[in-house]
Length: 158
Ligand SMILES: [Zn+2]
View 1 (cartoon, rainbow, N blue to C red):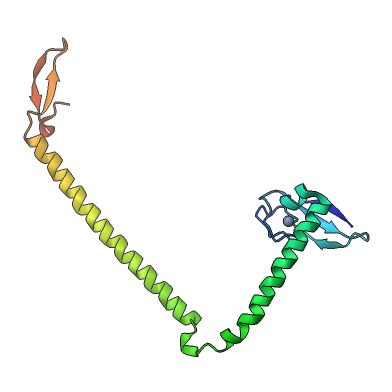
View 2 (view 1 turned 135 degrees about the horizontal axis):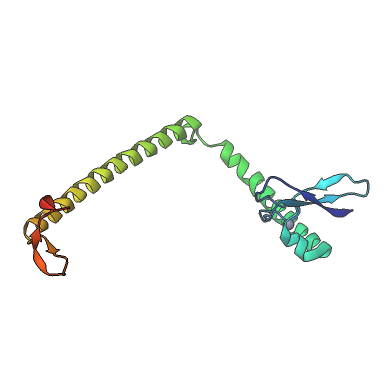
């Protein structure tokens, strides 16, 4: 048995078939192949690669123990799940109704937020306009840099 590097055009994280960890996002994968060249597993993680053959084997034993414990939990829980009353079981239809209601509420909140933003923006614009009304306007200077007067927004000479 040995490992083999392979090119990959699917750059994503994969679940490591040995330790259950996660690979990095890379343009390669590392497979485990037997002596006949048959691929036993693909997408071995960098953690297993770094730990070497003996370290990877230890990671595999730890993962196997975790899977055994998970299998025991599932076996123990299955009868209790089987006993759940139909009304206490979330159906896909109920979940989809819930999802649509969440979407509807989000759109409602967004519309309220947009309206609030619009009211505040209008109030800000009114306040800015009032402030302009109450000042002398922008200063106007001649070519020598002498102040010749003030103009308001509407009477700009340029
Ligand atoms: Zn691994």
